Amino acid sequence: MSKQMNTVVSGDESEIHDEPHIRDRRITVSHIHALVEERGLDAQTVADRFDLTVSDVYHALAYYHDHPEEMRAVEEHRRELHEAAEDDPDIITGPEDLPQS
Image 1 (cartoon, rainbow, N blue to C red):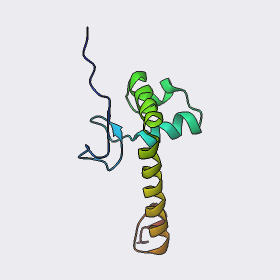
Image 2 (image 1 turned 60 degrees about the vertical axis):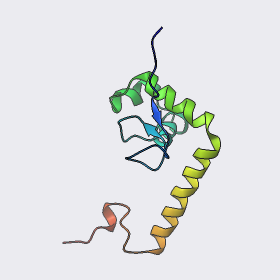
Image 3 (image 1 turned 45 degrees about the vertical axis):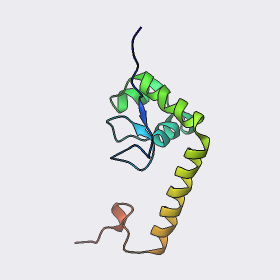
């Protein structure tokens, strides 16, 4: 019987993100969920785009649905950061916020 390594790292265990993501990658569970279940992309397309396996994509989706409280907290934290950025002109959220040279 093969031993399967956890594909998803929780935000509490991560050294690179403060939210769940694919192990050794910077792609978050939330991003996978948004691409597959909100935008309707095929799991294989997402896997190909980010050099993942289809299994990685489905593990991320399973994690999203198995941890609803954690994922709601992640989304709330993102919302708070976005609102803070709207109130502070010094926070850069995209290319349009960079000073013009």
